[in-house]
Image 1: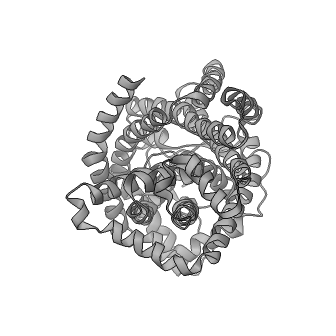
Image 2 (image 1 turned 135 degrees about the horizontal axis):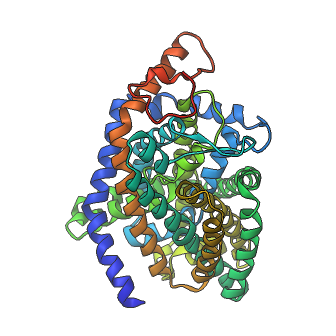
Image 3 (image 1 turned 45 degrees about the vertical axis):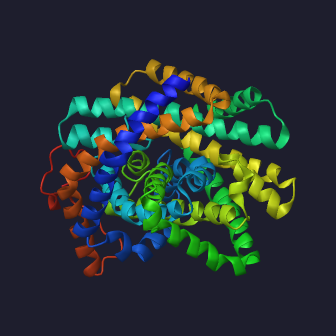
Length: 469
């Protein structure tokens, strides 16, 4: 395992030290400039769209805009928002939090582009009473005509989310419950596997229903706890902010790798958490029933803010306000549990374990959906999907007892491969998104509160199978 971990670390160092960061940041700035900062101009509209769609009901097994948002948020908001932030601070320093904020604002534009594209190139499921399907594999195939590229991405995301990322979630659940309750990690893995299979085998509609219920509750509780801690330690709050900004721009430390470590760690943990540019969220975005592709693009762009600026920031201040966190000599979920013990006493680790369970479990079922959509892109036969579910179960069990560094390094490696594939496609297909956004904003200027899409506004209509002329 040590040899494998060292080899994966070497590849990650190469990809993340230059290639991925240049591609992600460059694409984020490009999309921000070309859309005139759509993620900032339409911030209020993003929020209103989510609120307005929260109570909407759909017919049969179709998925509402809010449910699609919850599915993507379920995948986004997982252990990366809790354990991943603790790891970022201990390895990259407090300055890594600033760079996570930075990549969230820039990445929100990328999130808008990929989710809008997913809506443009979505296709109706074979069952008329079911949801839509879409995502990078679909716009790679239908938008660009790259069938082989689409198939490779479909396999890549299925392995990454269904197997690698779910092993990360299982790993953190088992560590948290073992640390808090002394629970056997394999027993925990078995229980999580069974619960996951119950939801997963119910299909997209059950996943949507479960995430619609669990996501607002878990996120709300966690943010309220964090706000309470910040209020209680309000005198120390300015120092915490100062530490973040000072560490982020500590040029003196940069010569020793300090600033560089903060930037790299912040980018990696930020992307792992908010997933902008990976090509994962578009799979959920495409499933929504909307009148205009840009509508869901805006909704999903706001999801990047929810994930990083709200949830990740909550974790960051929980760690930074706890005192001398560095002296604890631990990281990941164990550090978060230690922090909670400083605030609420030794029994608090049990409470955080329950929250971790909700966060990680929601991610497991959200991650599965991304895999299912792409397995169905590859084939209409049922047996590959059943095999995929079996492999997911195996990886959940594997993750429950795997070593933490190997699991996280695998996640970083597969994340890099997905970014390389997806962002390249986004750059090529961006004119489609730009045209759709222009059409959307023109309708808003005319006083149309809920714009309706016509694909004739796009420079290319080939490969678009759902939207009417």
